[in-house]
Each structure stands twice: as structure tokens, then as C-alpha cells.
Image 1 (cartoon, rainbow, N blue to C red):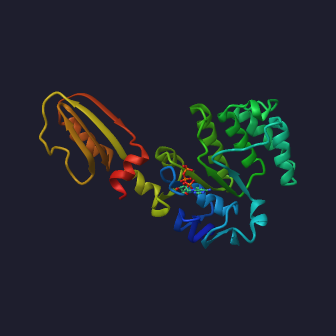
Image 2 (image 1 turned 90 degrees about the vertical axis):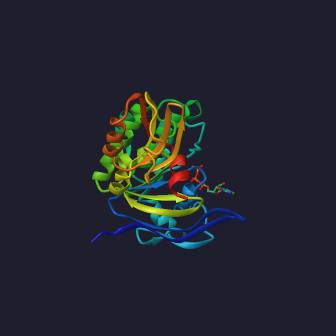
Image 3 (image 1 turned 180 degrees about the vertical axis):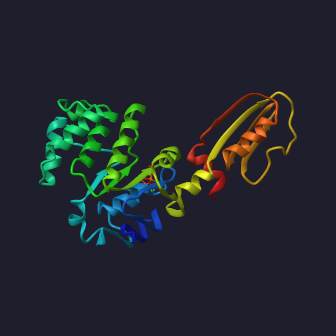
Length: 293
Ligand SMILES: Nc1ncnc2c1ncn2[C@@H]1O[C@H](COP(=O)(O)OP(=O)(O)OP(=O)(O)O)[C@@H](O)[C@H]1O
């Protein structure tokens, strides 16, 4: 039987009159890598901060490890690793001092684990925090979040500022942690990242959960932004169907967003005479604008 590591029930948070989140409910099961996705300002950080008792909800409840997130926050924190979207650190410390300090909070000897993570992420621990770039600060945040091998890892926009190579290493580290049994809540506004690493995803828009989907289903509905330069004019409605949105024809330029199986759209393009073709991932904003109204 599966165990729920996170249970969120009708959680709302208003900042005065301003909506943070409204009636958010979802559960994350043990061993899942669960994606939490939505455009900027949708309410991801608000939900996460409430889970960690950094802010108090206006109404509703949230449990982690069957404990109340607010009342039993201290007990929960021992087994949670958290990477905030914007890391504020003790700027005067060196990386080494900061990581030692973080480990002491858990009263554990984490030195072997720290060394391992530091090497993997190519982090120089002799430098002062204030001298680090945003990306290197992020690496410090990753090590600080993982050094005590937590049972639950909560990541808020973790890859912001990481270069592509380090991003790959970071994904490998997360997969290893997950294999060892860690549950992961992964918040992002980048659909492709969530698609790569997560098994399930909750989609949030304007403070409300609009969908919780299995990744296999979501991948079947893979979104593509298609731009073509056709060498012969095409019929006005050639691509017009339910799975096509934002359809535009301007002279020989055709563009649209497609939701569906890749081979179907490739076949339609194959039957045309085209001079050029671009197929890329649409931004989350484009997807939300056209498919999640
Ligand atoms: N301290 C605050 N005071 C007032 N409003 C806030 C505060 N923090 C967040 N909000 C508002 O709550 C809403 C949700 O913000 P939140 O930061 O949770 O979104 P997000 O999905 O994490 O987006 P981002 O990635 O941009 O942080 C936004 O409209 C935001 O302006």
C-alpha cells in the first residue's frame, strides 16, 4: 500500500486581500518525484512556504509524514531538505563554514556526504559566499538541502542559474536520492524539466490547482510549437483541428502550437513541400494561454 508523504487539503493563503493560493489540494506518495508546475506568480512558492511553516495558511491544512505542517514543524524539519527559490545566506561565511553550520543543525556528521556532493557539483568551498555567482550560490543551496540525506526533498525552482552541465549532474543526484528512497517535490515553471524527471505533476494557475496528471499522460499530450516555411501555399484549414492552437498563416510562414502525438504532426508536415521547419517547446505561458483557460 502506498503511503502519502505530503497531504494538502483545501489550503488557502491570502496576503491581506491579495490571493496567494486558493483551495489547493494534492497528495504526494512515498518514493515519487512529484512536479509542481505553473507560471510565475501562480502560487508555487506560497504552497511550499506553507508546507515548511515559513508562513501560516489562511485556511485548510497540510501534513507531512502524517504530522501537521504548522504544529509539528520542528519534527518534520529533521527529515526534510529544502532548496528555496532565492537563497539568502550568511554572506560573510566561507562555503565550508556554511555547510558545517548547516550540518550542525541536524546534529549529524555529514562530512562524507558534503565532500561527495561538493565534488560532483564542482563547488569550491574555500570561497566566501558573498563572492559567489548566483549559480554557485545555488550549488551551495543544493548541498545544504541534501547533506543530511532527507526523506523528503523540496525544491523550489532548483535549476535557475545552473549551467547545462551542472543541471545534468544535479538531475543524476536527484535520481540517485530517489532510488535510495527519497520523495521529491519539484517546483518549476519549465515544463521540459518536470517532464524529464517527474512521475506525476500538479499544475497550478492563478492560485488554484487545475490538473494533477500522470507524466505518461502528459507526455502523450506533448506540446510542440511548430513553425514552417512552406514552398507552396497550403489549404487554409490544413492544420486546423482540435489539437492545434494559435494557428497563424502569414504569406508562406505557418505557425501554431500542437498538442498530441509527435508522429501524427510529423506525418502532416511530411505531406507538404517545406523549405524550413522549426519544432520547439512552447513556453508554459503559451500552453496555459491556449489550453488551460
Ligand atoms: N509576501 C507577499 N505579499 C503579498 N503578496 C505575495 C507575497 N508573496 C507572494 N505574493 C503573491 O502571491 C501570489 C503567488 O506568488 P508565489 O510567489 O507563490 O508564486 P510562484 O508560483 O512561486 O511564482 P514565482 O516563481 O514567480 O515565485 C502572487 O500573486 C504574488 O504576488
